[in-house]
Amino acid sequence: MTVFRSSLTIGTFTLGSRLLGFARDVIMAQVLGAGPMADAFFVALRLPNLFRQLMAEGAFNVAFVPMLTRKLSDGEDRSEAESFANAVFALLFTLSFSLTVLGMVFMPYLVMALAPGFIDDAERFDLAVTLGRITFPYLTFIVFVSYASGITNTLGRFALGAAAPMFLNIAFIFCLLLLPGHGVSAGQAAAWAVPLGGAMQAGLMLWAIRKVKFGLRLHMPHKHPALATLLRRLGASMLGVGVQLFNSVFSTFLASNLVAGSISYLFYADRLNQLPLALVGIAIGTALLPHLSRALKNDDMKGASQAFGQAIVFGFCLALAAAAGLFMLADELMRVLFMRGAFDANAAHQTALALMAYSLGLPAYILVKITATVFYAAEDTKTPFQTAVVSLIVNVVASLALIVGFAHVGLALAGGIAAWVNVAVQGYLIYKRGLMPQLKASYLRSHALRAVLVNLVLVAVVMGYKTLLPLPAAGILGAAWLSGAIVLALVTFVGGLVVTGLLDKSLIRRFRNRR
Image 1 (tube, one colour):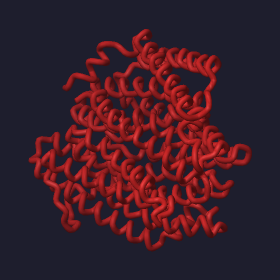
Image 2 (cartoon, rainbow, N blue to C red):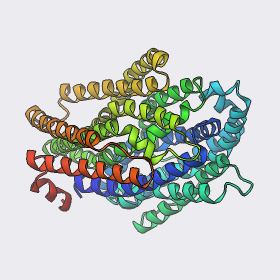
Image 3 (tube, rainbow, N blue to C red):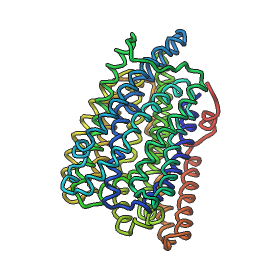
Image 4 (spheres, rainbow, N blue to C red):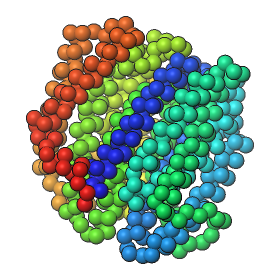
């Protein structure tokens, strides 16, 4: 299956999940709002997610997938690959379960470390601790989900792994609609949705593993010849991902000292910013990793360069369009999607400002998911760590400088600045080291210029729409206005791709054809 077809599969299911996520966020904004309870819940939600990203999705897959791909590609008996995967599973389960227990016991200290601004606010602090103990078991479930997705992705089965997040959103919608008012607060309802959704995701991926007939067995941790290599690479990649996660933790750390609601403003804005990041950056990066791993293993530099070049062009073009759309429609998105119930006009305005700031860094967030894949496919985890350290330093300095005059908006801006530095350094190293030797600079320049031209036309069309037809009152008319803006933007964008030759018949054939 080609990178584009794999990306399309992942992106399609991710879109379904994100649409459910929008419904979830609309309900959450109406029920939780952007006050102290919402701040407490978002801190409680971030805690297991941080460990998940550190142990599983970010660090684990980039170390595990290339090794499993190599074992399956070397012509070894599949039972050897299964033995390796089972040894990894035993280790992961032991670590994640132990961390879950320790996290629940020491939850007050975790909250103090992540949100020190809550210490002087007993209500928010106690609530964050209570909700954190409810959400933390999600860690064990989602580590298994990430592990199982790594196996199915390696085997070329991307659909179920991409569909799994839908179940978390379904759990949120179910709990938020049915539990409040029955002796359960809105914050508790949202918190209980987290482990429930994790259990549903784990059940789906257990079925997926059986569907691909992979011999998964849970047993006590034991030595395996390849485990030491995996742990070395995992340690290096965890450092790299940990540095990236520090940026997110640092933003929460600083935001907890701002006015109540600041953490919530950043959360809701980031939710919208994450949609194109997941649809484009993560989808392409996830699909590209096994393709590049196989190409580099077979010394197919032409195939590797072609796949990477197409991924960069594809990602850059879509990233620019998404960033422009979010920036221009930030206020309208917040008013139409979230401004109801406990989410008032001020919350909508403050969140829109944060979204505009996030959108400026969106292309970099997407591109770095693609550039980092080159190093991971070559089993080089050191370079992404080094570039992430540079990014961290930039983020800390920029956050401290910008928070003074721009409050929570400055934190969103700082993250984008750091992401641009990260992708610039990684791109330079890919070029300097000749990692993609058959990728022509002229190819990238010509396609980038055409992408910029298409998006300039897109900006002009959407701004004209806003000028000639201002947003009516929120509600059905507001939703219709926003739908019209999105449809107009999509038609303009696709038309621009066709006119400039960025979307041609050969690209469409790549979506359809298998290798």
